Amino acid sequence: MSEGDAVDKLLAELSEFERAALEAFERASDAATLEAARVRFLGQRRGWFKQLEQRFRALPREGKRTCGPRFNEVRSRVREAFSKAQARLEQGAAQGGQPEAAAVQPTGGLRFGGAAVTAGRAEAFDFTVPGKRVRRGTLHPLTHTIEELIRIFGRLGFELADGPEVEDEWHNFEALNIPPEHPARDPNDNFYLDPRRLLRSQTSTVQIRVMERQRPPVRIIAIGRVYRPDVHDATHFSMFHQIEGLYVDRHVTLAHLKTVLRQFAQAYLGPDVQIRFRPSFFPFTEPSVEVDMSWDVRGGQWVELGGAGMVDPNVFRAVGYDPEEYTGFAFGLGVERLCMRRHGIHDIRLFYENDVRFLKQF
Image 1 (cartoon, one colour):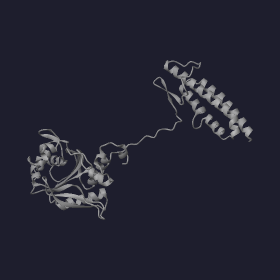
Image 2: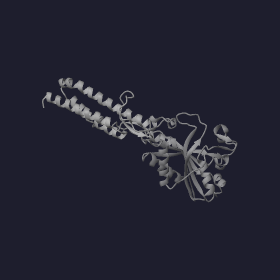
Image 3: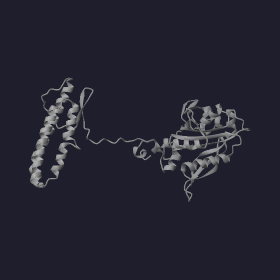
Image 4: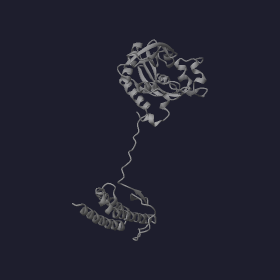
């Protein structure tokens, strides 16, 4: 086909397109009919005018110069006819009656999009516009960590226990062999709500509540928030999460404690993790140890994970257990600290700043 024939054919189709579009928009009696006509003639993907526009762009320069004025004229007239039909239907819907057959003046500039009647009013909506991708949320990294800790210790036979975050001094201190003169009970080091109640400073309170109502054997973990008035920095926060473990039965030894913590560390952090015990002191365990780990066995630094030890006989006596018959171990680990070691996070404050740039990485 010669250039002249292509130009003549395009001009003829433009006239046919103009006639059909003007007639369809004028005859549209409701929003659904108008929207169907708009998609047919002005749709952004497969509309008739879109196809003509693609053929126009394929013309040589002289062909474009010949068809250009007519092309722009048809586009303007068709879009204006659509705007008038849209305004006519909107006015009819607003008045609560049938739209007038005669066209009204357009309400303003060109409005792209069909009309969908909702609650008696017409609202613009273009079905050909690509949709917006919905941003999917994800669990907080600490929630991920807590769920994984529960699964790991569940495989080791530990059940999940829970307790209140507002505690009395008996469960938070006295039953844990922390006497009144102990510095851990200083009001400046705790969040007291009244002289006898405070926000719990450790999840060890849960083990007391469990032992008060359950006879051995006991094998539980408790995970939850604890509160201490620490100054916020890269490694301290006034609220953080702690996981407490307790195993009480006959003939429980420190070897059982080390085995459980080693299996846990390797399950959570990888098979190359090493752990070690350092002698320490805690009022509620005797003997007591600090638990350290080294993730890089090729000379990596040792990092403290938490405290542990054999349950002190005075704790057993406080809950009615016979320390001559039962022994047990307990350990407490920081959930934030575990999460930070696993993911290479160097500032605990990132967990609580709600910075989406940080959170969306998990």
